Length: 306
View 1 (cartoon, rainbow, N blue to C red):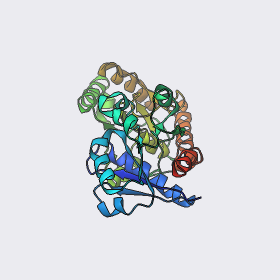
View 2: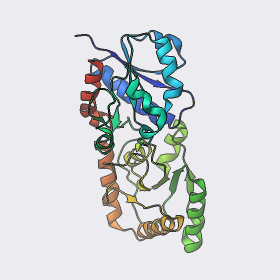
View 3: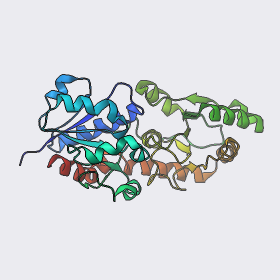
View 4: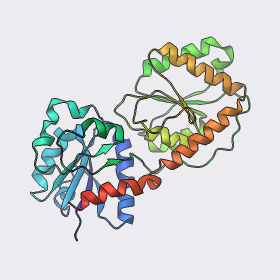
């Protein structure tokens, strides 16, 4: 039985591009290892679009307006479309009615059981099960640095810069010791900078909208950082009281107070933080691209078999 080629598609300027690229590339690599045809392309690479063999194109549903016309124009009648629900709220927007009318839509790919339950009663192609958004980590390995009473170095990753600045100021004014903490701005989209700066940090502070993935957090957990984060960005099934500090970001003051509590525990060398870091490492290991691929393969194989 011949299989379709799974072709992951990116545009130059879509949101969360690096997270999607890491996810798509890891899946393409593992699918190739498993004997299926898969690759990642840029949508404006006309030769790659036209040269795909019985393709099923996988792309972010939210980027449909940019991607779909180019695919439909260049790939011919044999292609199928399998949009990915990267941002769960996009599904309910009026422009997305196209997925129920377009006969080329083979399936809507959904990360996470919770999101799948919300849309399962609406027609959108074949039901293939859910996917784990996972990637190969940039840095892996248990950290040897002890939590020994010194001040931690905080890496921060945020789309809410005003909140982060408020938290920094609040923390430094509350305790004179904390005024000397190093804060390191991180950028997940800059891979070399991310790989260089992430291992120098002890805590990752991240405040993210609901539409991102958990990949930056998992990267940091795999590198041995303690996560301090709100509940945005694909954390369903990842966050627990044992593997990080997860805040309810109702107000910046509340975020700052919870961070201060964590910093005091760090300064007092709370042994429970070592256990939390170990659990974060374990969580990341279980959520890696290779560890979750067996579950993802069932959906990819079903898609390639259509």
